[in-house]
Image (tube, rainbow, N blue to C red):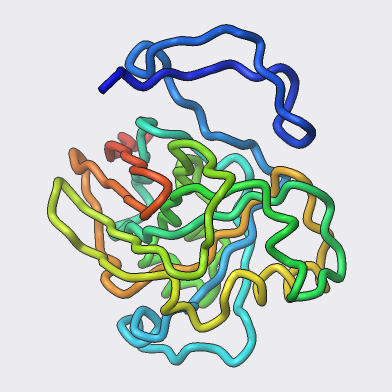
Length: 240
């Protein structure tokens, strides 16, 4: 089997893709996050068993929150644990990247607005989420949105296996078919509230099995048809 290679594209991926002709072996390049969004819109409690493991019921309408673009990192980048939190959790998820402006989208047409799909990790300071009673601080630290390792542009998102491992041990093993609100519903719902712009990311929710990560761990999120996103974990030393 030939070694995997990476080809450079000319311009950006939101129009017809053309290649420059430059090509490199995959081990010789560093993969950045495949997109830098204007916003990340995430779904909470979108798998019934995950909602219950945290003492909640799944919502009748999608429960959304925002993560800042500064939380996004790429394949191999370090998840940095803030000293202000005593429990930071992994949450493996399917990410959808929007390819064209979406406003008041019909559910039937919703997937046509997707440029591609990636693996994601909605890293969460769980103790701060409980203390605050909402999501913003707990979800927003720099490095709390690993995304990658690339975009898969030809994929049916409705029944994909998601497996999250910590140091090689399986912690989550679910399927996107278990979502309470599927991706088409999510896009239609979100686009009634805010315009989705090219490059914006939707994190579609996490299956049951979330749990803590600590300094020295390696977290991987593997999604069928996409690949594996892997990130080491390191604690940030408190300022003197």
